[in-house]
Length: 115
Ligand code: AMP
Ligand code: ZN
Image (cartoon, rainbow, N blue to C red; front, side):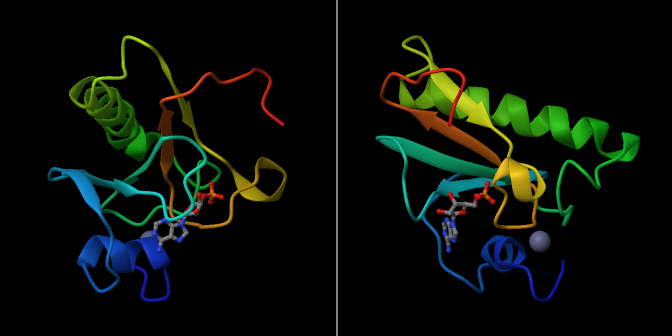
C-alpha cells in the first residue's frame, strides 16, 4: 500500500469504486471516464507503479491480471465479439495513475494502431 496512491485507496475501500470482480491478487472496477460501453480497470492489490518498475518477481501477478481481464470479458458476454486490453506506461504511453493497471475495453469496434 502506498499512502498517496489513488488505486491503493480504491483497493482498500477508502475511495469508492464500482467493483465488478475481485480475488486475492487483484480487483477490477469501472473506469470513472469510460472510453467504451464497457471500460474496466484491473489492478493488483499490491502496489506496483508501472510496467517500467515491474520485475520478474511480478511475473505471476501480471499473468493473473490478464487472465482476470479475459474472465471478466467472458462473464460480461463480450469476449466472443472482441475487446481490447491496454497497459499505458509512463508519459509517452499516456499513464496518469502510477499504480499498474490493465484497461479492459469492450462493446465497440476498436482501431489499430490506437492514437
Ligand atoms: P492511465 O491513464 O492508463 O493511467 O489510466 C488511468 C485511468 O484511471 C483513466 O482511464 C481514468 O479515467 C481512471 N480513473 C481515474 N480516477 C478514477 C477513479 N477514482 N475511479 C475509477 N477510475 C478512475
Ligand atoms: Zn498503489
